[in-house]
Image (cartoon, rainbow, N blue to C red; front, side, top):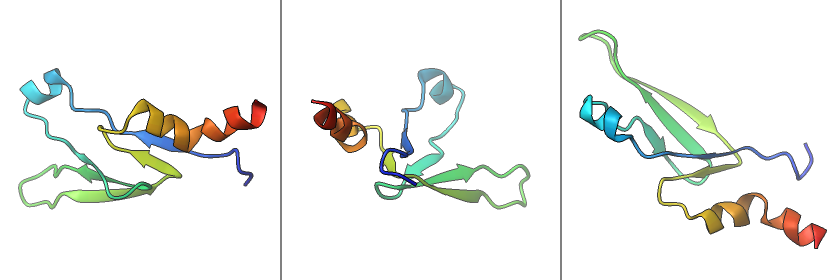
Length: 81
């Protein structure tokens, strides 16, 4: 894998429509690379499940555009200029 192949994700805030319908935030950013997705239980006697995904970069809701740019493509611009 070369230095240019990177996968980045950014968590979005829960929408007003989702909030009004009673949905809860089911995505947690563990650190700057790990995303935990909480899959709700289907039946009363079933436990919620967690799925873990690892990316090159995982940004939470409060990440700035500059932070995302600097950590994902900023090096490309510097290389071109």
